[in-house]
Length: 583
Ligand SMILES: Cc1cc2nc3c(=O)[nH]c(=O)nc-3n(C[C@H](O)[C@H](O)[C@H](O)COP(=O)(O)OP(=O)(O)OC[C@H]3O[C@@H](n4cnc5c(N)ncnc54)[C@H](O)[C@@H]3O)c2cc1C
Ligand SMILES: Cc1cc2nc3c(=O)[nH]c(=O)nc-3n(C[C@H](O)[C@H](O)[C@H](O)COP(=O)(O)O)c2cc1C
Ligand code: FES
Image 1 (cartoon, rainbow, N blue to C red):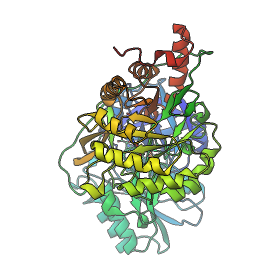
Image 2 (cartoon, protein in one colour):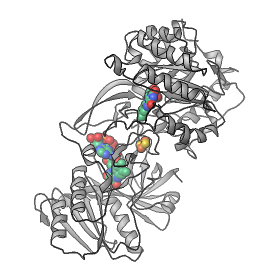
Image 3 (tube, rainbow, N blue to C red):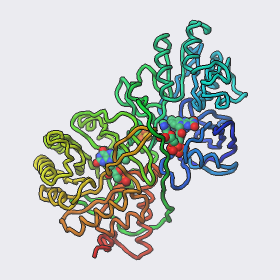
Image 4 (cartoon, rainbow, N blue to C red):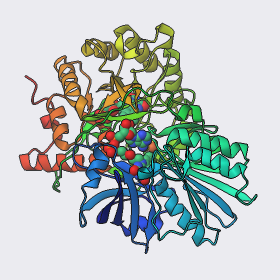
């Protein structure tokens, strides 16, 4: 079970240069936490994504401790927390922790820098099972940067490696590991290496473990958005395909990680970031929020934006799914897609950039594995479809046409057309017409065409889609953007509050063009006030994406806020405000 709770700070103590230990009271998380699991913390307003931290220890079934290093705005903010402060926290997260059983007689824990945090919890758990105490190998640049396990933890031995030789072995912690194993300083039945630290270090540890034929588990870190397995932003490549660090990890068998895709190839520059959030809502009742989108009846105009809500199932117990107007699934292709290598996400001022690369299980698995759950919901299910050729879209639409429980398809035309030079379908009216009319011919389901903002005239594209038979238009998809992530260039799609004015402008232009089909606004919507603005410029409904990462209840709060607003304004029916700002 994942809890979203308020945790009280009991201690936030500086342990060394830029390193802090925090003790929090949060019984729900403490009772269920296992070594290797983590929590996410909401930082100050202006920081969009919740920050993940490993659980470094659990005490008395009530308290958890964290060890963290200040590296940017989120951790700098955390470092200012005082005793008695309340933090918003989600956890325990991570579907796969470290393997712990009584057969692990000898274990080596390899920690690079702040990577020691989850290993402290692990060492205590191993000992409590009656296993011999583990050997800790700790590495850092210099003696000042070494993070020591707290004294109360039982550890057989600690060996230190510093790159400048100011403490312990002069060199890297991986050299120390190799020396320890080669010198046979450990019993031959050493059963496990557990490692946490920087990516290049983990790669070398994995190689050493393989060479010495010792099982090895690594805890991996990627930037996260949802933390619950829905957005695919944290996915890494493994020998069993893509795995999500937040849900399928963060602990992985080192032999299964495709290290060349996980470890950055080159370093150019370092970047830092910030961004904002939502506002509180009151409770009210008795107004009509229902809208009709091209033949689809919605009890309210709020839906999750494709790709930010997985297949809904990921949010069971976190979001009251049946309160939503409809559900829009992650984009589906004909065949399964692996998606992009890491990095897949980064935060930018007022938003984020993603390059998931359309990872999805393919339509067959989608129908077999995702539809049974979606059919249990009491709301329309809209399936977002993507393709590289017109034929692919057409085949997909044909397959979905006969599947029970689908209310509509949303065509993502922000995909490159591989047959015609890689131009996005949504950038050329001719291509947009081709793809929408091909889908129209094969399905009786209502069609929503989702427009890209990467165009000079969105109205021209929209007109082509309407001519081809679309029943509604949604705008906008993410905006093409570039950011530096850990020194590497990342090309992707920008979302979040920074694109809201652009999305609003596009809806305004589409509404003024009077195209004769309903419009769905999407892009940077965080609050009910944002939704009112979209409705006033002509949207009949909205899709909310990035806001859910910063506030799981964003859509529920927006629906409640809209109800409250209408009641206060004496407006009985939400349709009355649609288009009221158009002149
Ligand atoms: C499962 C998990 C467990 C973690 N446990 C701990 C922990 O116990 N203690 C601790 O100090 N940190 C931990 N981290 C890392 C921590 O989440 C980041 O340092 C933190 O989010 C940085 O936030 P910031 O706003 O201070 O810095 P930002 O400005 O967000 O980041 C500073 C720099 O670090 C990079 N970065 C940020 N987060 C990550 C990441 N997850 N992976 C790779 N690069 C990143 C950014 O691209 C940027 O270059 C963990 C991360 C994960 C995914
Ligand atoms: C992680 C992520 C994955 C996405 N995947 C898809 C997708 O599969 N299909 C699609 O049409 N749009 C996808 N989008 C775009 C969103 O549906 C939405 O159009 C965009 O994020 C703007 O809305 P927002 O600012 O509220 O997030 C994705 C966006 C994000 C952030
Ligand atoms: S952060 Fe892992 S899937 Fe969203």
